[in-house]
Amino acid sequence: KAEDVHPNRKEEPEFTEDKQNKKANTILNILLVTIPVLLVWLLCYAPDDGLYSEWKPVCLVVAVFIILYVTYGRIYGSFYVSMVRISEMVYSQSLAMVMADGVLYVVLCLVCRRFIAVWPLGTALIAQVILSVLWCVAAHKWYFKTYPPKKTAIVYDHGESVDALIGAYGLRKKYNVL
Image (cartoon, rainbow, N blue to C red):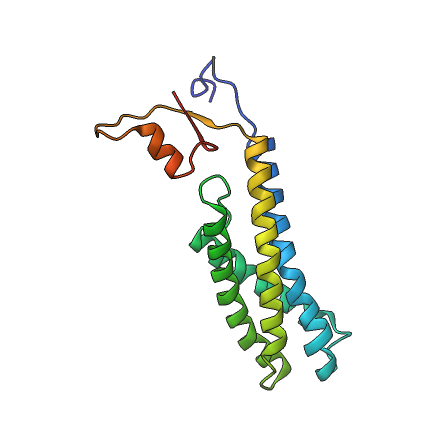
């Protein structure tokens, strides 16, 4: 209806460049941690069972891992570059990867119709954590280089200096206190 639209309000596009950049960054993380799982499947598990040339098991393995990783990653807050420290992102992503890889192991056993060796998936987990650390450091640097600190007003009623607290918690990159 014409009456429902405010005359001075401009419509913002649903998918802004900021959201697009952040989504691309998250998709890059998902792809990076999926690569070791895919390599382990193709190099260690699929050749043993003659599943190397079939594309359905490959798609199943990749889809299951991505769904689990993204779900656990959202539960643990793995993708909030602007809100958490690098160590917290690495920890939450590692936790999401352990959970996703654990469930994926069961799926792989079902696809291969036998119990499979754990060490290739354990090696993939180590590679995933290393890639996660690299991504978290790069994403953190990129984010705070691209987006300036947010202007913030703080109402504080204790004797300690607010400036000292902001420095102690490492919030200078995130907030520009007025």
